[in-house]
Amino acid sequence: MYIEELTLTNYRSYVKTKVSFENKVNVILGENAQGKTNIMESIFVLALAKSHRTTKEKELIRWDEEYAKIEGTVKKSNGLASLQLVITTKGKKAKVNSLEQRRLSDYIGSLNVVMFAPEDLNLVKGSPQVRRRFIDMEIGQVNPIYMHELNQYQKILHQRNHLLKNLQRSPKSDYTMLEILTEQLSEIAAKITKRRIAFTQQLEKWAQPIHSGISRNLETLNIIYKPSLEVLESYELSKMKEDYINKFTEIRKREIDRGTTLLGPHRDDLEFLVNEKNVQTYGSQGQQRTTALSLKLAEIELIHEEVGEYPILLLDDVLSELDDFRQSHLLNTIQGKVQTFVTTTSVDGIDHETLMQAATYKVVSGEINRLK
Ligand SMILES: Nc1ncnc2c1ncn2[C@@H]1O[C@H](COP(=O)(O)OP(=O)(O)OP(=O)(O)O)[C@@H](O)[C@H]1O
Image (cartoon, rainbow, N blue to C red):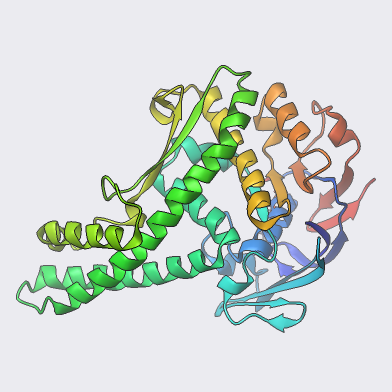
């Protein structure tokens, strides 16, 4: 799939902008703070109805305006789709081919993207939250039900935490509600855990040969899902739910003392092993970069496997962070098959053939124009 045209209205620094793109590499050039990342972010938001750099949606709306609108014409193997996402301070509304989507989770997946920005180099080294967000975004865009389950999970988790805090203050309260919420949370926790384990295995399958290639066959990569509920011997949903309920019963006193839910997908993590050693603890910076790059390239293949089309790749200011060999590996992999957007302040030093043939745009003060 690829984006033919993008229109932004009141989106961050853009008042009204319409721009056509090519189904190849599109390089977006510009000095600092001119609006390059805003373009990348708008494509990401059009796909996932969420920003990669903020949770505060108000920031996406141009100052002193009421709403922001992102429109995109997307070419897919089954034809053209016109997508529209309107963001207000009260919420978001999405349309596909002028039809309003009842739920955002139904809309997500209309456009698939993979973003690679400098902060993704943090995927390995950063906090577990960064890795959980990565998993959720990736499964969410190929599986709308997962997004729905995740929302439900967050709601029940919030209620349960609130109740645990109340129980902490008045221990004589009724425990029936806690049992009901524990049962509901365990049911969804099992579904989410199961999907995440399956996703991790699928991601590992794609990432392993890629990592070997980038490391010139010197390194092997393993990706392990680390659930907060230990040893999930059975992957059967009912058994997993039962395991969660039993464990919650076991740690009830501790949870009430702490006033929070101590177990579940919101506490899980991913572990990366290079040559069987934890790369977060023992890996060099180079190995950590190779791992992050392998994961991103694996994501592209995984989405292709799931939806039957390659996603769009957004490389925000990241090429200059990679050495020549990793840069070439990345550009050789995407060449001719993935529509790619690259932002950079300058193409000096990046002399790969793919970039020579790219469509080039210049961004100045919130306006984008084609150069070649
Ligand atoms: N809600 C908003 N309304 C108006 N302008 C905004 C809004 N949010 C951000 N901006 C402006 O957008 C500009 C930043 O754009 P962007 O992050 O895309 O820069 P960039 O070209 O990627 O720069 P760099 O190379 O430094 O990353 C800033 O000038 C900022 O003031």
